[in-house]
Image (cartoon, rainbow, N blue to C red):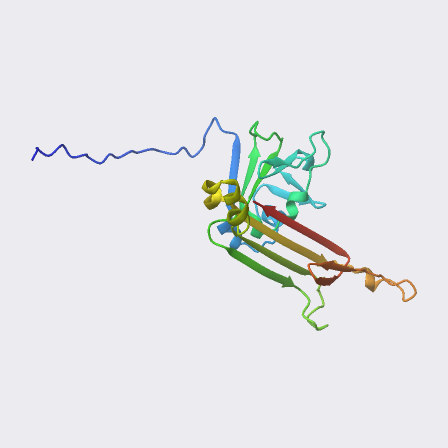
Length: 239
């Protein structure tokens, strides 16, 4: 039996974070999925309203006093703002909060990865994992009685999402192609959301019987939904 070797001594590394970094002009704030669960929000626009340094005027977002056209949106690395200097795209604001894995709000100086001027809103959406999970949600401010609906906008929000291991390609297509090594890494994520409301001033209250406000029926996946004054639908699929 040989002699025991020297024991390894634990090492201690100490460091000090500077309160103010003189060489960094950027302020970054991350909002994770766990944080979003605790916030009274439904979409990206609501999340931005809770952030310091973000203001809203005429449904346009501004960071640190910059113009709305100077704010860049990116979803999963794809920029959505007009590169020719048009008005900043707001389509990313309709993404449901349940679809978001992380939002990075960068204020001030920007990275050349995206560009931008006053700020960047970088959104990462969720992906499927090895366990199938789903979510179904429904919100409304219509309680069915006139006494409770005095301030109702006849609002309804329906949302559904599901994600997990792919049940089709990994069982049939990939084995047929001899790609068995990718079976454990292929997942999917699907999300559907639909909002509808009449707003603060419903047209139906200000029309005459001779010229009523008429709305059509929306048919989707076997469901029949009555169209309202404002209707917004959004879908996300990832593989």
